[in-house]
Image (cartoon, rainbow, N blue to C red; front, side):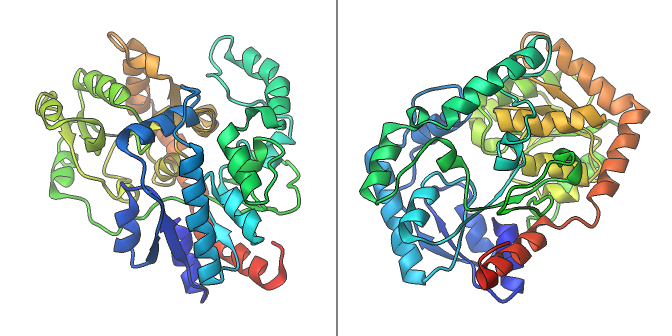
Length: 396
């Protein structure tokens, strides 16, 4: 969202943020944007529950009527107070309610998977890993799940209730995960000739460019002969996965930099193997040519950063969308798709995958070609141009 806001500002429009939850909100302030107060942020327990719900690991969620009511009210107040001509959101589940209630267009920069274009394409949906019988399961589940997503039964009662209070009718779950205008943040190869529906355009990759330098510690580790591996699980990882991954990396002949402090206690960090170096958040877009490989969750921005910088990676998709993001590049050959279970015990699948991406010259060559394909792509700039067309002409 910060990348899009920067590009929007360069075109003479005024972006204003509203953030409900804490953790990354300081990045908005550091980037110099105005930020309106949101609703009460989730507690750590509520945030974990929201991530588990999003990843399909739990049916329980923190989006009670009270939570939704407060968030929708704050958003509607902001839209009216600003006289906003459009709302751009980053997977904020109450935006489809507040924007429809205020009758302003909702714009969503989003991965291709689960977009309207993808669902209309008849391509399989990555409900489970494609390994083994996974491909068959994904094909079998596509029809029934898509039908269920188009009904009201999958919409949590709290969403239906608060939507009705605001004069909005949600016909199905897709009303929450789709928007009026969709900006696909992917390369052309993901679309594979798919015809895009009205209101959808491809803008290209968008990933963070943090305004900081690499710490000396990282550069010193990169100067050593031992391969340097970057390990990060973004905001959707778990303490269990982080500990298993670092344990496995501790047994590998590599040095590791890992911005994963949010998942570990100080005591746990102190007990890590000597080859593991836990750091603060790093400007990952500067790691190209510095690190030899990466171990990542499947968030699209994180995956695109690795691809654009020519870094081969192991991806652990923690949700259907993230599995898709990783498997796109696993098929190309600059990545390996694993599951969290591959880190258990002696983690033999992980160690095989790590050796593969560190030593196979074909992997390195493919990573370089993929990086070249990302050159010249500027999803943030294209998003801003699309938003400007929408504001001026009412369409993309």
